Image (cartoon, rainbow, N blue to C red; front, top):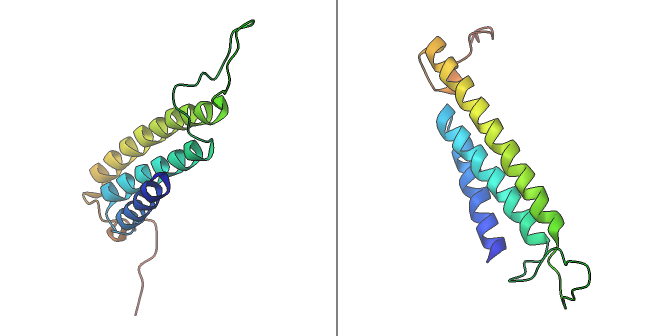
Length: 114
């Protein structure tokens, strides 16, 4: 189930990133980021109701792996910061160029002559 979810997120994110518009590109980037997070989380062997840490003197039969959870939490925070920055940058770009189509945002590139 996790692998199917990751596959669907990667497919939808890739499709959105190839749309040629800035906002769907950003949403596709978020979907790919979530797919990566879910893949890392799934690789840590999902467990239910098992503690990641056991206090001294207590016994637990099985433990949850805390490393994927810590990695995912860090990735979520970094992804949120990246998304906020790219949204602000895309808003500024839209204010300067008046368009969200990426093929029309070629102000710095020379025009093609055919």
